[in-house]
Image 1: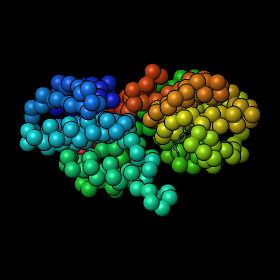
Image 2 (image 1 turned 90 degrees about the vertical axis):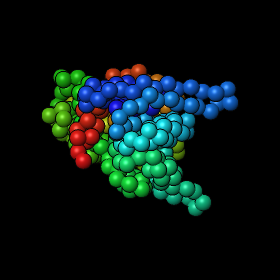
Image 3 (image 1 turned 120 degrees about the vertical axis):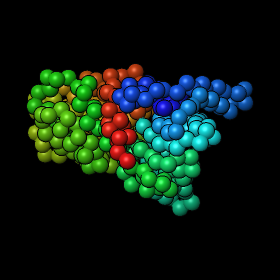
Image 4 (image 1 turned 180 degrees about the horizontal axis):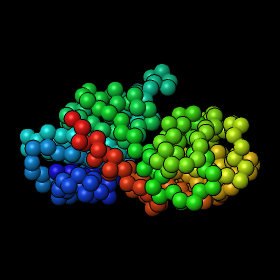
Length: 283
Ligand code: R5P
């Protein structure tokens, strides 16, 4: 059975269709003191629990789902479409935790295997105690893009995004890839140094693993327009879109913002369900 966390209901439904597995009836409740309770009507030998850990509450809920399924004696595969705290993957200042490791350890206690969709760094999977692998679903971002892009450039706003740009270009089956160099100035602002690629008159899709505040993409879009790019689109596997990110992006001149269903957002999305379904077939 597929068991869904509250933040992954649409994707869980798509995964049930892609795998032909039933979707377990699940209810989510909250007590007056703010604590959550999840109830799952699970039957079977193996559960695929799929839950984006978007907040601390959703993280606790995943642990509850794992515990409820384990209580029946079933084995568990945990799929984390969007792993919260994954960007805190090292000690940045003395005295700080490796938050990604802390949450990975907790999740490890209730599962036999873990799949993480496009973690910020694939090495985050090493923080889980058991088998854990990254799932690259970036190619799915090609699906909702317009088919009539002119000589497209798939551009990573920093070097770390070049692999995602390659995946999207290959899936789109046209265009070229490139990347800019990014320096982060604060939590919301970055500085971008462009490459030498001539983007004049070309359509550009800026692709990243995450759009959080939108600061990175907005800066890239400004540079692209200065350099004569035609239409500029934004696409990210994980459309976090914190606060006013969408307004920032559209005010910066982005034609459209695309994402996947690792997070449920009101933008055009592609489902990552087929990619997860393929990984589930592997032992
Ligand atoms: C950082 O390296 C990530 O790949 C993203 O570029 C970053 O998280 C995007 O954040 P924001 O939208 O706040 O600029």
